[in-house]
Structures are given as structure tokens and as C-alpha cells.
Length: 79
Image (tube, rainbow, N blue to C red; front, top):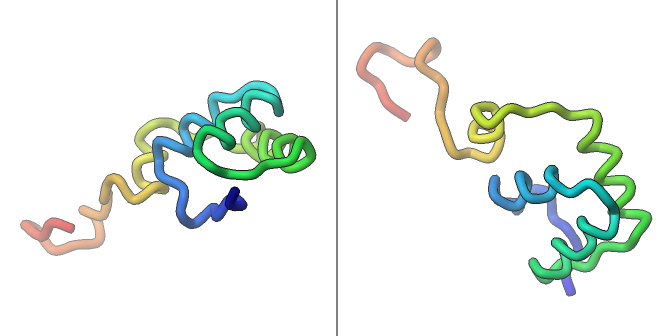
């Protein structure tokens, strides 16, 4: 099984990971995605998620699903 590459996670995977409440849930989710995750790693990720509050709009931007750059682009320019 592979290790987690944070740069290759999809917004759906991030959302599912953030919904996990226990290390066991996160480990099972990772396993279903073909990712190897130890209990210690799961606990560390959950700790990171507790520190981050991302609403769905920001999640889309972080995961590359939405461009919110209208303030920086000339009128009529779309990303």
C-alpha cells in the first residue's frame, strides 16, 4: 500500500478524511483508498484536522475546484 501524498489528495478525499472522528475510522478510510496509515499517523492527521476549519467554499478553492480570482483579473477574464 502507498503512503499519503498530501499533494495528490482530491477534495472528496479531504472531505471524507475531515469527517472521520476516530483514528480507526480514518485508518479504514485510508485502507479503502489503498493508503497505508498507522494509528499514530491517523491520530496526527486528526489532530491537524481539529485545528483547521474549512467551509465548503474554501475547500473547493484549496482543492483546486474553484477559482475565486475576480478581484485580480481584468473584467471578462475567466480562469
